Image (cartoon, rainbow, N blue to C red; front, side, top):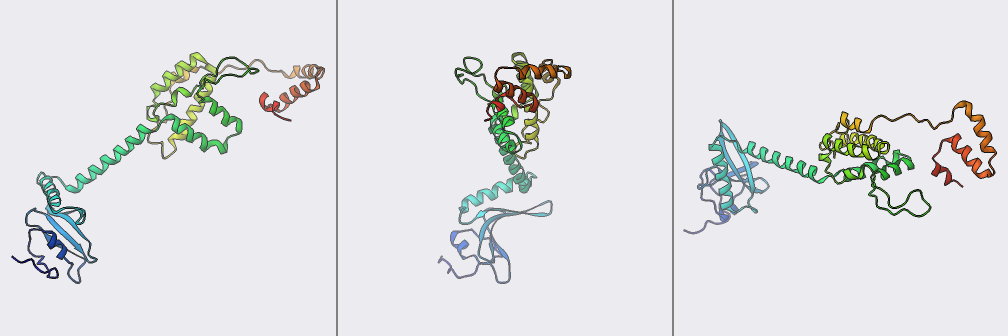
Length: 294
């Protein structure tokens, strides 16, 4: 049988054995936005052509008296046999009472859940801590920012001669948490961390705990982390008890001691030392900050 001319119109009222040639000859009738050419081998398989000439394989059937139509793909990307196999798959699903649209929604939902889980598995406390410090840096003083860096420092740095202490620097209290996944920063994990820090360095650990709580609160308000972090992870009773209450300082000058103190400091043989001590008391700066002044 001779092949029909390419300009010969197809009878869209009849199902045919789809071929590449038939699909090439398919055109949208004048005055219509789209038209369909049915396949005689795969129930529900059609080729849709639009007024602008775009062609795609679609599956069409009825479910509960409603017409279900699902796009399979562009005819340039799908082979006819692959499109038939996809149409058969939709037909089998519908015969089982399943809506292909709902199956597609469930598949997309599973993909979205997998993507969220992948983010949870990838983000560590250290990743979020770095972002946190950079985000808060404009609102913090230089010293406050440096304190946060020190809390998470790795340690192992050899101390130079002339500094207080000998040997190597210790890891910061928050450093042991940095390698954890942010999603694994659970109340139980923080309780274990606080128990260790509370035994080794209660005062410094208490400071780290306060900073950790602020960090977790920040994460719970950020779009990238709020679905991952547990907002109240650092607020359990066990964690609070591990550090205890801060004691009141007793190494302070009383009002009645001030006159004697100033008299004694002004009597020092070094005017530089006398000026340093008085300024330190009057403005309340840190020792290192005042020593750096010129």
